[in-house]
Figure 1: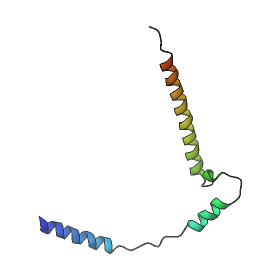
Figure 2: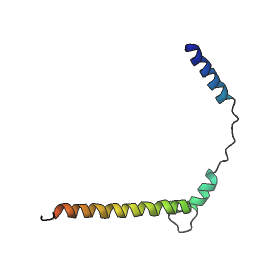
Figure 3: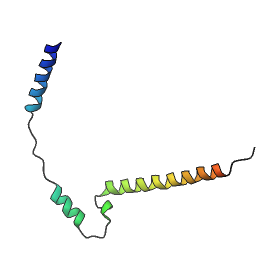
Length: 82
């Protein structure tokens, strides 16, 4: 059993160390230029369509959650008479 564990350990080391490393492109300067550009847009929307969708979804869920909480509070404060 211990021999199998050592063999597995050696195989896993060999596979991890023999992988080819990818060269990653540094995108930070491009993103800095995009976010520091003075175009009148709020910073939370400068990322593009994905940011706008996330912002609107968050705002929608916030409004719906607030409305639901108010509804439940009113329902609890004014119980129905049987």
